[in-house]
Image (cartoon, rainbow, N blue to C red; front, side, top):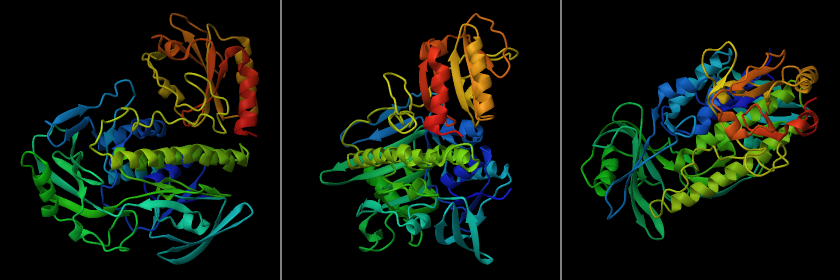
Length: 525
């Protein structure tokens, strides 16, 4: 099968997009300018919401095996005793995980290879032009220049995106005039495994003096960051405006040790440095995420301070949002208008992340830790967007679908979580019933006839019942009562392929409302 989508960039965002397109039945070609993945531990944190995404993709276990649970932070502030702040995400399916970016890319690349797709390395985008429904590109690679056409192109090629520049999309914002130094080092100290350390000395009207150490999976290793001293900073106008300055010498072990000695109350010995670099930070947001058949995602759209580990996660969730929509349109199963919802849903998310991380960075160490769920990304909602035009009180269309446990299915000797039931590439209609009525059976048959392979119907019966198995419908029993406690017994719930709520309403109106939503709002053909 020829690739109908070109993905430019094989970092976490591009790999996620290519793999998700393949899972949804659309083959992508993925290229990257680099000859090999970078060894830098640029991003570390994987949010609980991203782990839910990885579970749906089928790689959560591999990510967890490659990482380390980030259990909290030891905070050191002037004049105060050390304070250990422990995370409690026991009410979520997953906690916060630390995975070095090169490991995230390794897991995603191996996952993509199971679909028979591998990134083509050393390939750059030389030009891009749109002609009707075709996007014509010129690619420069190891064997010279190649001309090719694709139905869609997606730029996942970072802050200096060639795709964004080819489209002429404005990338407005500002950069900080100071730089940071990063290092992958071993540290001898008494900080418990799984705790990060933030040592901060706030300075009025200036960036704080800080030493941040985030644990890596290898015992005793950390990714550390600190303000770069003036002697390491580039002259005005030197270097790029964001990211690792790979063309310049990094910090030395002595540079990092000097900051640790200045800010830590007890001696901590840094040694065995694997790599170091100088890092710059900007806050920018693309004016648009799309120009006809060409899209951008991840750092090509938005860059911001690394506070809370939001950048890579926001980018991967851009890809997760776009993939199912792009696949439906590419396969001719939905109208092209569905693709308008990508920018409408994801750009406000990035705008909020930029505002929050910039504010948190400027006030680092000057106030409390804030909402414990803010950085988990489980609070991201698409309420009021084109796919959730009517929002109500409580859990509503546009919200992330909560997970519940204790569901049982006939013939299975173990309970199920709701996210196990939702896993896959289709919409899922959840209907709570005492026993499966003929109207639901007729609706399921109608939906399968109209849009074969696009939607599943699942009925959830109360605990203690023994509903009859029905052709074309999955029958569950709410044995633990958690489904009813969370969702009630009078509402039906239509869940999108990315586990966000598309529609919810009374069970007695489900037939007409779901048909209208899928046909008129989503645009299934």
